Amino acid sequence: MIYLTVIHWLVLLFFLALFLLLVFISKKETRRNVFWSMVFASFLVTSTAALFSMFVLDKYTKKGKLLSIENHRVLRTEEIVFKGSVQNVGKFKIGRCKLTIKLINNPVESGKLSGGQIYQPSGFGNFFQSHKERRERPNTVKKEFVVARYLEPNEIQPFTIRMPYPPYFKKTRLVYKLHCH
Image 1 (cartoon, rainbow, N blue to C red):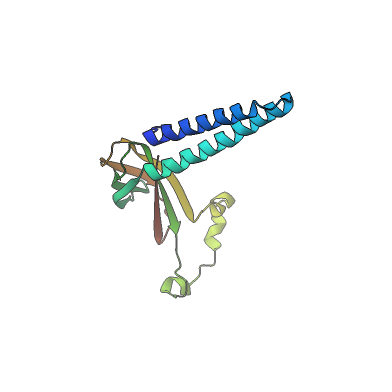
Image 2 (spheres, helix red, strand yellow):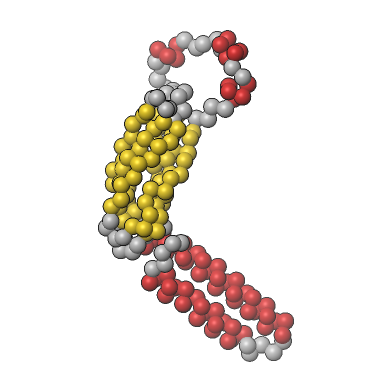
């Protein structure tokens, strides 16, 4: 977490005070082994709760929005270029926004028959390809990019991303997911 908000610090202070209160209560135990096990259990419970609350606060206080995104292919280099912008729509600073782009190859639409589906090649030409080239043709390509850093509230930052585009993809579906923290 790059930026801790005021709410994050207050939650950390709350869990620290809770831990100290539990240690103070466990001091009344006279047996030494039981005292240390109570302190250890208190530490585990409060630190786990503090960690989970940090992630929850991070999710709900730092909100980014993908304003616009457009893409075009560069055939010369077999790449796809994405241009867009990200806006901080929350009230707190955002340290980093990551955009996950997933390219999914959908060569055949279910239930429809097109001219390309009537003729199926015999695969004789595949004899000249190596076994590795025939096998490694994934239908999904997933990449993660950092598209914005240190966004102030209501600030907009443009970005440009280049990623390889497999030449064997026919009908590509794009899925975008923005995660800011």
